[in-house]
Image 1: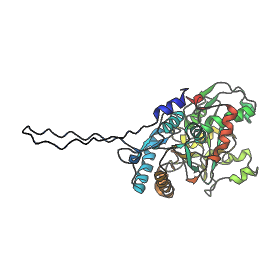
Image 2 (image 1 turned 90 degrees about the vertical axis):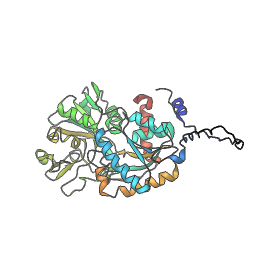
Image 3 (image 1 turned 60 degrees about the vertical axis):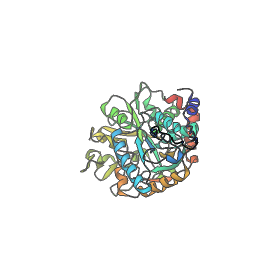
Image 4 (image 1 turned 45 degrees about the horizontal axis):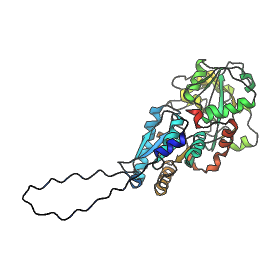
Length: 371
């Protein structure tokens, strides 16, 4: 839709005032009195937001299985309701772009969990404002990974010249935007490019051999002590080499879903990237699919509010979310491995996402490109 500004103006809510006219005192009559008419239905206003009649919309982008998102989202909604007394309505729009359009179309009563790229676009489009960024195992950033078959001959990004590419969606930061920049910088022109629909689908496409390489989110694996194999400071200092992206070669053959089927574990090492999400369909995915390369660091996903969200309600929700992140129920919601796998949240500022704006300026992409 090209005329997005006109659409937003057309969707602004106008609340009318209902004026009641006072009539003269009734006159005595022998006629049967008229039955009282029903009171007109009240028009919802900003003061209704968060009531059962006007719940706060909670949007999640469809980057993983929608059923998992809805189930975990309801756990969060119940916890926030218990903490604040406010009511929430969880939904998963059909795409990243649809999520942005919906939060902009409902500027007073919507909050959304959207990735870095989606946030930059939504902020530019209608002033959506970030509150928190995700923390995953101590990292305020994540990476895109290039996945290839373990027995393929690909050793560098340059080797992908002419290869077929599977990516989630055009609006996915780690699935498309950052990998696209890396491929451009490497001078690579890919062959057929296929929009798979999500990170899991891209990993499966590589596993099945339907594409030569796929791009998904990456998180650092955990070592047998339960700690990240390397830290963000190690990355910044240049101490991370390509052989450290994946689990050690000597443990690959042991990789399999753990006893409760929540992770893929490799002789004590734990897989946290997108391959772990397809452990049910492809329990031997680590034996079949390896990591070729990583992108530059990407700011973590956001929890953001619509531009005109009431400040008092926002403060209540922010406090409740911080408290919820410290509870065991968090792991059944957005902290679940099959959901967004957030281990916590940290306050964020709009400036944290300037790197995304720089990349959008470089590519010339806008929301119109993602419809």
